[in-house]
Length: 163
Image (cartoon, rainbow, N blue to C red; front, side, top):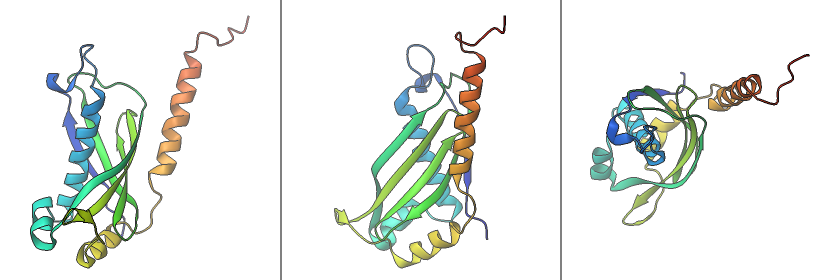
């Protein structure tokens, strides 16, 4: 079984942009949240179902994001989401906003009654099955970074003209 990599398309609207017409930095976070929610739905679950059945909710406890390039109004973006690791009470997601725009690592903690709690066993088994081995985003992230570096060096004003 291949790990579940959910892709979710989202268009950049006027309300998502800053004064310059670029995607506002906090809008990236909303798009990533939607990607994680759609990943969960792809497994046949919803946040409301999980909270109602087990009392557990997921809360972001750590987020690391690298903004690689700006998105602009009317761009159609794709959010890619997959599990990269999970522990007793947390799940780590690797997410990418396609077109080389952003890469994020998001750690979500399982919370029950306002306190950290173990991931319920039924969810743990489902998450384990959805994250079986396949090269994760790390290799694709490295490629994106090296492609960006190569592209920047081509357009660098300090590049030798060869004369």
